[in-house]
Figure 1: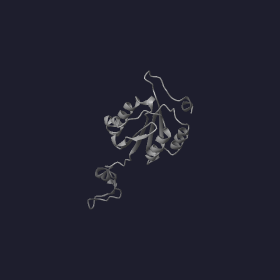
Figure 2: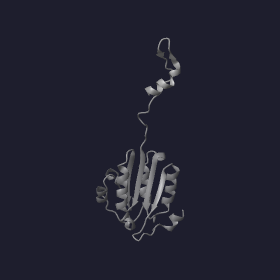
Figure 3: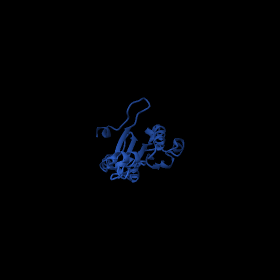
Figure 4: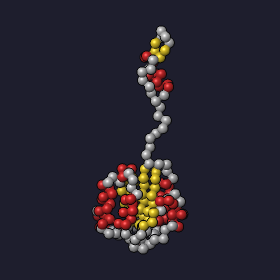
Length: 171
């Protein structure tokens, strides 16, 4: 930063030889250090949650277009489908889902934990009705304790009412 360097060093000007002696240099920051943020969106696609996939695919595609945000999109019922390569294209992500059976969030959580590279810069959004095995709750606690910011999002039925397992809701 030439202007600031000259201004701050004017007290070092020597009129006899017409020179400015610089003892402090100042720099202008031209590049900003920025680290990626990680967003993992996990969507329950059991029979009661099929309608949520459309909104989640759109949400993931919006976040995937943001700079320095790495988005992973995972859908699950009793199986897990990693839709991360298609997170920027909601139509393609929807065409690749063919779920709608039971629920096994434990398997999905094991997969999602494998996607965490830097827990302090990772947010995991879990969209489900949480009608799942109780083991999932302990896994959620472990993920939170690792430093991941965990956001549980409950299911909303077509009539606008929350449809979330009472046991999970209380905890």
